Amino acid sequence: MSILDDSARCKLFEDIASKVWKKIIKAHDVNANLPEIGITADILVKILQYNKGLTNFDVYAKNSWNESMYGSDIDVFVETYKNQYRWFALQAKILKSSNQYDKLRYASGGIFQWDKLTLLEAVSGCKSYYLLYNGRDGYVHNGNDSCDRNFTESQFGCSLVEPMDIKRIANKTKANGSFIKATFEDFHPKFAQPW
Image 1 (cartoon, rainbow, N blue to C red):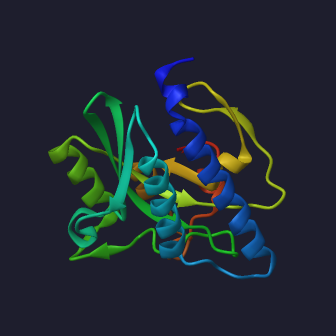
Image 2: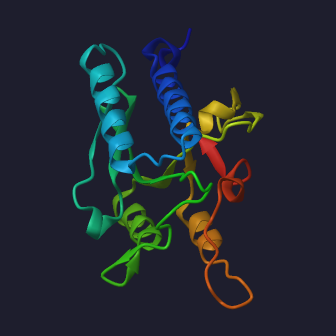
């Protein structure tokens, strides 16, 4: 068994994604939309609870320091070697019961979140992604993640998408010039990977 397997981090993230997937499906079944901030808070608690009992490889999460300046909602730190961490700056968006994501084109101070995330990555060395919270009843998928591990659709409960893929899709327009709201299928499975 590898040190990574022994740390159970993969299982932690798989369990979180699966629970998010199921929770969103249940909400959409009654035409309800869950608040993104609530899902993010639940995830922070799950990671911190996991961290509390950990003795070998660490994982830690916190609310981002300054979302309006840097574009991320949640920062996740994963220990890769003893006392060396990889920082993931994540901007969360939740799938609505309409099968669309709201506020992908969000800008503050005239700068879009995808540009802030890309700048943060360039100056800090972190890795930035959009963290999409999803659940699609009836959607079926079997694939391999970026580590070449098998996964099913429920792992898209928490999916990672590169900021520039979000930008490209969020900037698509109709013939009249109005922006098209991105759907789950615009990103999955082509541009998304399980976290």
